[in-house]
Length: 102
Image 1 (cartoon, one colour):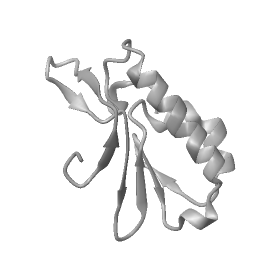
Image 2 (cartoon, one colour; image 1 turned 135 degrees about the horizontal axis):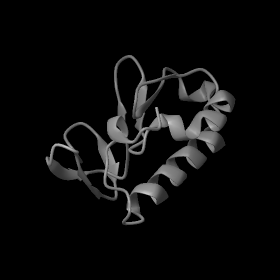
Image 3 (cartoon, one colour; image 1 turned 30 degrees about the vertical axis):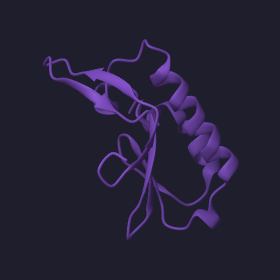
Image 4 (cartoon, one colour; image 1 turned 90 degrees about the vertical axis):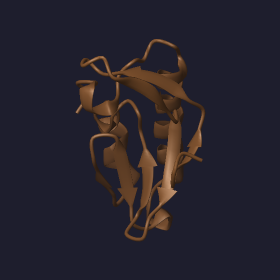
């Protein structure tokens, strides 16, 4: 658990400012308004898949789905798996807002 986020794995990030820390490599949170899926390397890297996902909105590093029964769970699984692989490969050091993949 990372606060109210159910997280899986971990990666280390470092901002250009020098601030650094650890975060879950993949995570989700059941919020009142939507289920939030965290994509640590930024949603911009998944534009091609997001158009196939179904009803959702996005933030820089989040996918918000009001109803998981209306989205393509295989597409969502692919996005999460690719993001997880990217941030756990040992070469990813940024956070979504600094990735340049908006």
